[in-house]
Amino acid sequence: MSLLGGITNTATSTTSSLVGSVGDTLSNTTGIVGGTIGSTVGTVGQTVDAVGQTVSDAGQAVTKIDDKMGDFDESIDPPKPNEINKWIVNKPIGAARVWSGRHLIYSRTGDEAMYGIGDRYLTNITWVQLISWRNDTEAEQQYQYAYSTSLKVTKGTEVQNGIDVKGSYNGMSIGISETRKTFSAIETTETQTTTITVKVPAKATLTFYQKRYEFHEECTFVNDAWGKEWNAGPWGGYTPLLTLKWDTQIMADEYLTTDQTLGSGPGLMTCTSVAPAPKADTTRKRENLTERCKNWLNSFDL
Image 1 (cartoon, rainbow, N blue to C red):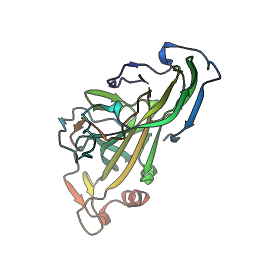
Image 2 (image 1 turned 90 degrees about the horizontal axis):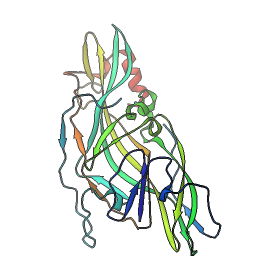
Image 3 (image 1 turned 90 degrees about the vertical axis):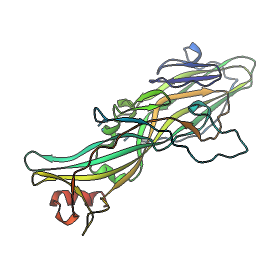
Image 4 (image 1 turned 180 degrees about the vertical axis):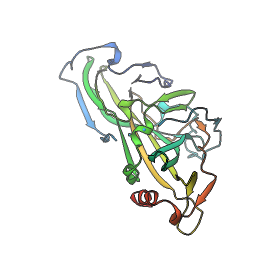
């Protein structure tokens, strides 16, 4: 038996399942913790701090990614695509560029501006185990549990010196396994704690997982000055373009409770990829960019 919850619909597993919304109680039961003879089995997982900005530019072309991933362990059956609720770790089939667009860093009307041109890739969807309940009694038991949403930059935190990472995820919509996931304010620019009531059948163990989305982003820069846009090149040259990279994790408002054991994976998922946002037509050496632009590049440790 598996139960899914969250503010967005997700694909259900092949076992019997129910899809719930935030604030609903599992097994259609409300109330406080009932009974004291069931036992709780340790807590596992992590707390993620809230951190999280622009959505995909309108009218971007989309293409289906169907490249093959690497080989799997021959001792197990290869995962079938889009069985996300069966595997702890799920990876896209091929490179999944799920967002591409501009980050405004600064703008002086009639003078100059600076933008980041970001390409954002979904790298993993992970079910993070937070707690398990074991009911050794002959009667159904109820428990309450609180989970929290959050967004955190886990690598390349210097990006937060000048780019609104939180805002760039708020409202972002991505295609995964023939469904769409849209990230809300409570998953990006804010954080929210929700308490649910869980029913554990007699002589059963139930595990609670929260869904975590993991992204990698690479960003080049454009300096709008002297009546034209210029890509930011390196010192003394034009290639490669200066590039800032960072990783982000979102603990989403989506959860799974199940008495089934999830495989370690990785499972496979199809994703919709968007076309890259355009860069400037010409490039300037770093020393020839405006002073303000060079100062911001320094703040990104580039």
